[in-house]
Length: 316
Image (cartoon, rainbow, N blue to C red; front, side, top):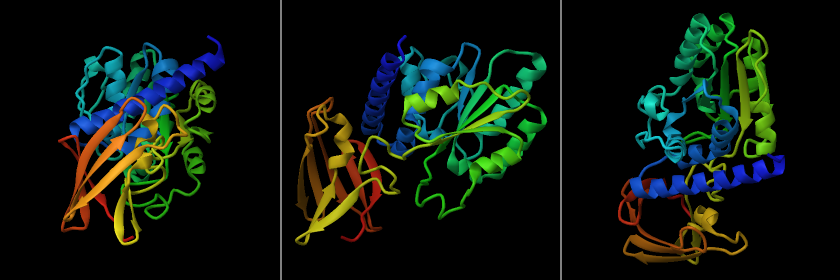
């Protein structure tokens, strides 16, 4: 297949997976959208191009499980759609993950077993950058290097944003590639984790002989939703002439067929609560919901009668 055609097809797949993930959020009422959207292109690249029949994939950052489950459903499997993964090998989920730093130790064990039993195929594991703050991660890196696990590939979603703060404000990782190299891992970087032209060549490179491989992929948390991108908060609130306005416009940008055409949003305050109505031109043409202000300074966002999330409301 011509490279440009392949890239265009993958871009369309990524757009659809983002839309499907948001639709699932609306339906189920919970999802880690920011961390889910930062890894979309990596998932597409792995499952559509890189992974071979004998390879296995572990999503260690399992709080962002929706896009993986939806991708697998698109391939005819039936994994349980949940915010933390439960083991189901027949449906593509090879271990239970959820707690930070949980997936890599399991992946190391699987790679060791394959080495000893001479089973073909690689183990791929995707981690969040927050997991690089966990002690189990660095113990696993030591073990992987000692046992020369060149059938193990770690992909780090390096979006530098955590649930409530930035990575640097939490536990800074500083020169992360140097750390991996010091642990005797083969290390590569991708500067734009949302570019298939940059991702695929690096993901398809072989491990150095006798070394496990780590690929640090620089991404944007909330990629595809302008008001999410690189922000620790999902939604912003602005003041105009004393009136509060909830800025939803960017949240639904990905549903517009014409990116130059702004979405229409109607916001109606009503004694501390509010309703909103979204109108777009793409896959979702309308969406309705409401806000309820809480005593703890957050608001409950309700979309189409069920989906709820807590968002902080800063002072305007």
